[in-house]
Length: 156
Image (tube, rainbow, N blue to C red; front, top):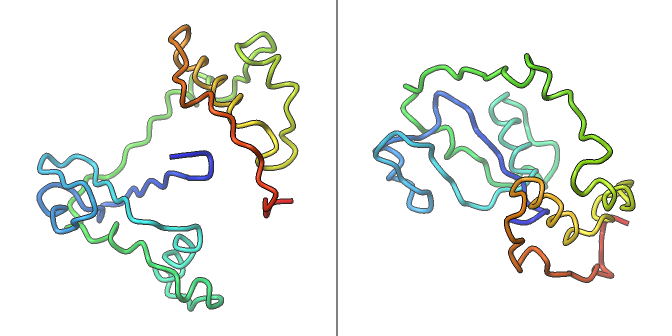
């Protein structure tokens, strides 16, 4: 997992689980009803193509027409209980709380350029996030690796 990857959570009564998830060899099967993990490669276009398919819409163009569907994640038996949202942080106001100006890493973060994707140095941000989550625990060496910016950056 790196900064260019995203996690997609599928919350559906049709999500595979339990013994039935063993039919998907790339995924991590679970006999306990634990969450199903699908490690296949999907892209943003896969998500769009899947939404189009679920809504009965035709593909908008060849990009989504030839993209893989995320249909494996909707092949469960349909017996999952309804999802119950946890509104704790909304109700206690924590979700609306910004980090104070004297928070760990605030001084370093204020010097970074967040006006465009990938302009802030990932190696420094990773260390700030580690320290925020782990406190005084030593920062792993792999988080301190500096990657040179690519000249072929397609975001500029």
